[in-house]
Length: 83
Image (cartoon, rainbow, N blue to C red; front, side, top):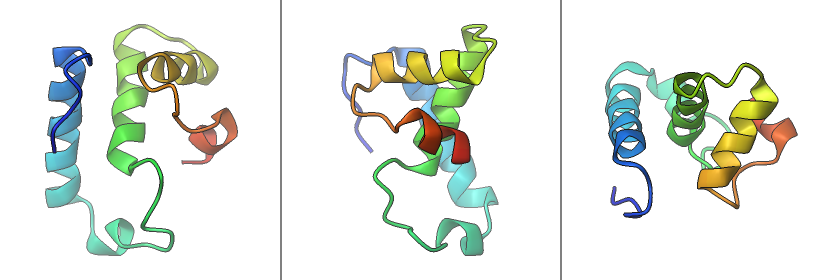
Protein backbone atom coordinates (compact mmCIF):
# COMPACT_ATOMS: atom_id res chain seq x y z
CA UNK A 1 0.00 0.00 0.00
CA UNK A 2 1.25 3.51 -0.76
CA UNK A 3 1.01 6.21 1.88
CA UNK A 4 0.84 9.96 1.77
CA UNK A 5 4.29 11.54 1.78
CA UNK A 6 3.17 13.98 4.50
CA UNK A 7 3.01 11.16 7.06
CA UNK A 8 6.08 10.82 9.29
CA UNK A 9 8.44 8.12 8.01
CA UNK A 10 8.44 6.41 11.40
CA UNK A 11 4.65 6.14 11.30
CA UNK A 12 4.74 4.68 7.78
CA UNK A 13 7.33 2.13 8.93
CA UNK A 14 5.19 1.27 11.96
CA UNK A 15 2.08 0.87 9.83
CA UNK A 16 3.75 -1.31 7.19
CA UNK A 17 5.24 -3.51 9.92
CA UNK A 18 1.84 -3.91 11.57
CA UNK A 19 0.24 -4.75 8.21
CA UNK A 20 2.83 -7.47 7.62
CA UNK A 21 2.33 -8.93 11.09
CA UNK A 22 -1.45 -8.71 10.74
CA UNK A 23 -1.42 -10.62 7.45
CA UNK A 24 0.94 -13.32 8.72
CA UNK A 25 -0.11 -13.76 12.36
CA UNK A 26 -3.80 -12.87 12.77
CA UNK A 27 -6.16 -15.80 12.10
CA UNK A 28 -8.30 -15.57 8.96
CA UNK A 29 -11.43 -15.79 11.12
CA UNK A 30 -10.48 -12.44 12.63
CA UNK A 31 -9.31 -10.86 9.37
CA UNK A 32 -12.50 -11.91 7.55
CA UNK A 33 -14.96 -11.24 10.33
CA UNK A 34 -18.32 -9.56 9.92
CA UNK A 35 -18.05 -5.94 8.67
CA UNK A 36 -14.78 -6.75 6.93
CA UNK A 37 -15.17 -3.68 4.70
CA UNK A 38 -14.52 -1.17 7.45
CA UNK A 39 -13.85 2.48 6.72
CA UNK A 40 -10.66 2.31 8.79
CA UNK A 41 -8.51 -0.81 8.79
CA UNK A 42 -7.56 -2.67 11.95
CA UNK A 43 -3.92 -2.06 11.08
CA UNK A 44 -4.42 1.70 10.98
CA UNK A 45 -6.22 1.69 14.34
CA UNK A 46 -3.43 -0.38 15.91
CA UNK A 47 -0.74 1.83 14.37
CA UNK A 48 -2.44 4.99 15.62
CA UNK A 49 -2.71 3.53 19.11
CA UNK A 50 0.99 2.61 19.13
CA UNK A 51 1.86 6.02 17.69
CA UNK A 52 0.16 7.52 20.72
CA UNK A 53 2.15 5.25 23.01
CA UNK A 54 5.39 6.35 21.32
CA UNK A 55 4.37 9.97 21.91
CA UNK A 56 3.71 9.28 25.60
CA UNK A 57 -0.02 9.95 25.30
CA UNK A 58 -1.35 8.75 28.63
CA UNK A 59 -5.06 8.57 27.88
CA UNK A 60 -7.03 6.93 25.12
CA UNK A 61 -8.56 10.32 24.35
CA UNK A 62 -5.08 11.79 23.81
CA UNK A 63 -4.15 8.90 21.51
CA UNK A 64 -7.33 9.50 19.51
CA UNK A 65 -6.62 13.23 19.21
CA UNK A 66 -3.11 12.46 17.97
CA UNK A 67 -4.56 10.08 15.37
CA UNK A 68 -7.00 12.76 14.25
CA UNK A 69 -4.12 15.18 13.77
CA UNK A 70 -2.65 12.72 11.24
CA UNK A 71 -5.97 11.68 9.69
CA UNK A 72 -8.69 14.35 9.86
CA UNK A 73 -11.38 11.81 8.83
CA UNK A 74 -10.31 9.25 11.44
CA UNK A 75 -12.87 7.25 13.42
CA UNK A 76 -15.04 8.91 16.01
CA UNK A 77 -13.74 8.50 19.55
CA UNK A 78 -16.46 6.00 20.55
CA UNK A 79 -15.67 3.76 17.56
CA UNK A 80 -11.94 4.01 18.27
CA UNK A 81 -12.55 2.81 21.82
CA UNK A 82 -14.67 -0.15 20.64
CA UNK A 83 -12.12 -1.31 18.07
